[in-house]
Amino acid sequence: MVRFSPVVDRRAAAAALLPMLVAMSAAATESSASDLERRAQASRELIKEFAGALKRELKGALAEGGPLRAITACSAVAPAIAQQYSSQKGWRIGRTSLKPRNPANAPDRWERSVLESFERRRTAGEDPARMEFFEMVEQDGKRVFRYMKAVPTAEKPCLACHGSNIRPEVAAALDERYPEDKARGFRAGEIRGAFTITQPLPR
Image (cartoon, rainbow, N blue to C red; front, side, top):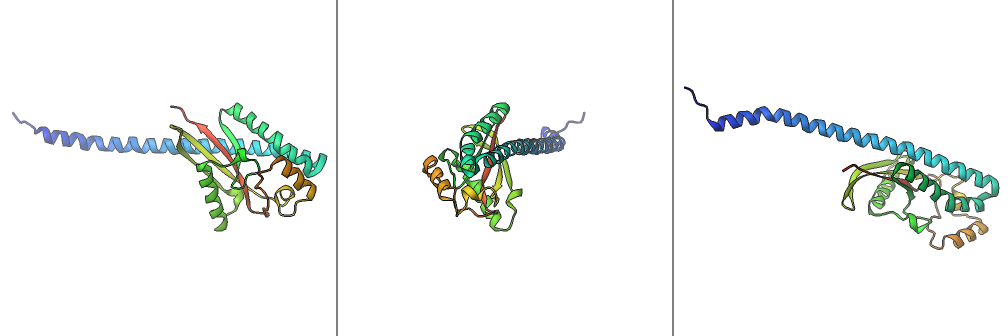
């Protein structure tokens, strides 16, 4: 009767199992990449809706009362729209900037890092309108998906309230409403800030 060494048997079993483990690992990686892109696309679509709603409100306010009316729209309507979309999706959506107008929109550590990378990319010649960044990260002990989309500064209407030559009455209104305002001195084509989204992940 022929007997096989247990050591050889274990080695043979491991060799047979290895391709299966590699295939499972590759499938898991592919699934993770697919989920990442799916969440990124969902974020792009939501930001498109959010930005469109903000633009409509801003255009209406400018037509109704110029930059002074637009300041009111930005301070009151924009957070309400963000809250509406956040409640609908169960995500956190908002705006942030390295030079925020409202201190409540100041970036957290992750957002600051992404905004700084956007600035480096712009300096290297990349178009801010195409800039985005997303990844899975650990936040408060939980895994979440985070996404940011750069917001370029347009000459009109952005510079009326965010440029260097702001009308005195507009500057006065900004000073009154935002005493800690840092969002001035921008030029067309610079990065005004970014839309930011956090999606919770299932456990």
